[in-house]
Length: 217
Image (cartoon, rainbow, N blue to C red; front, side):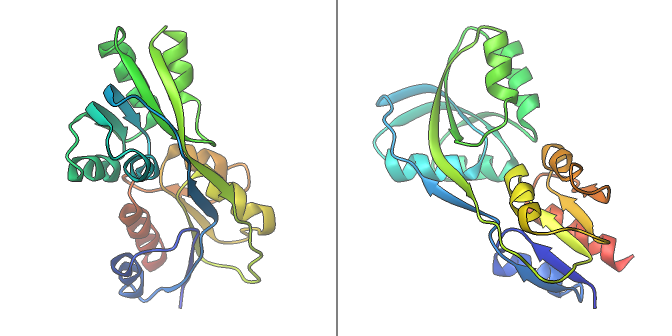
């Protein structure tokens, strides 16, 4: 039986997608997330969220604050914002695309950027280069959780560059394939292995589907 290691613990429905494909699964959390305490104004006109973690942290720490417009990365982030009653003006699959959109369409606006302590440079560097005003708010802290796993897998699922770094601190991917949630994660994985594929969309389910297809064929 083909085997898969997920560097993120999956939901029951997500696990079933692999098990129904007759693939054995091992899972663990390669990174740990801790929500931070932060202060923000009671009213925010424009907010940027690049992950669901930022959204969860916002609502855990600031239930009284109001946001008029949201700009986000990822379909799941968009759905979570809308589920909590917020209006999403623009969603893109990648941070670089959102940064370009903001520069082209909202250059004179001011933003609050909710992010983690380990975040990519695409959005802040692009906004700074084009003199777009924004305040960066560290909403959550990401720490690596490296664990030595004494076996090899046909595929390893990666969901962030941090997860890639954490896995390879203690492990190697000898013959298996790194299945990555997007181009940024894939770029990090290519620092350690040549066997890298990218999911069709930036969702956990798409990563699982890509792995299942890879191992069945």
